[in-house]
Image (cartoon, rainbow, N blue to C red; front, side):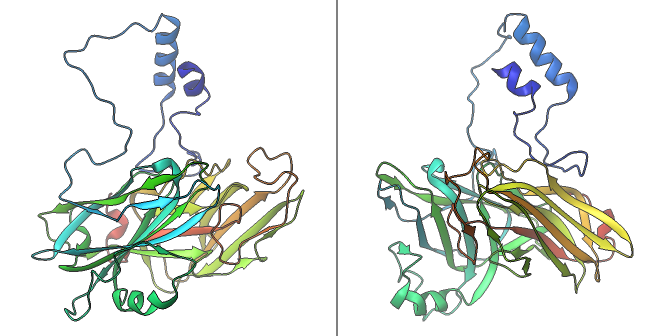
Length: 365
């Protein structure tokens, strides 16, 4: 099995087309490494010498101990095969601002997480009770708690998330964001349908740096749930393969660190690029989209997205009965309209970036 999946490049999982663009966080084997594994299998898979027992980690986590672990309250998910959207408020207080160089999302039951988004908010006003919303909130029925949420979310500091297959985002020395002394994390979890009752606990691991943060990392969501218009409207008819596109002009230059593509189960292929004065610059291309293996793709050095450039995102979707990932057999009409359910669809690109500064073209990551 190891020989087969590595020989087919199914493992390790890396969906971005290396012929289109290479990235700093690539998880790929060289041709020589694939041959080495095949020879090892054919030769009887003899165990190599080891001086001590090795412990295999199932996490892509930072290997050092986290400087802070902030956990949400346990959430009970019923085994009714229905999706759930939940808000969890995680309050925090530190003695001082902290320089953050990496954040990692964890769940006690990762397999039930469709995706997770989290925003970090400063709440400097001591009159606002950051501990007021202790219990999880059904995101579909915020109701009377909307005013309290609005008070807590006035000053956003950082926004990011986790999707299946992705690795933690880390920042080079001097780049990152400052963790406020006092505030909350608003965590939105999308839980996949479960046939059994599950108690889930989400947490965030923070890794702080002694180096001062001189430039603050920012994020921008384009497409479903963000800025920019999908053309035509994202509606997939049964037994059809359809193409959709987002185009928007960049009004201020950006220095990109990561690009994070996103589609759902019916996604077939994905391409993002920008054009300026007749030149087309590739950002990311995924020829065979797989919802189970998503990633925030890290550039080898800051990629400049110039002012006046036209950013284009193209997505192809397969809503036919021949698509083995189609959750509806026979196929049904599938649409977006801002809905995030697994059986709905999305076309989006999250940019993790810095406002452009002269010399960024030569800054490695």
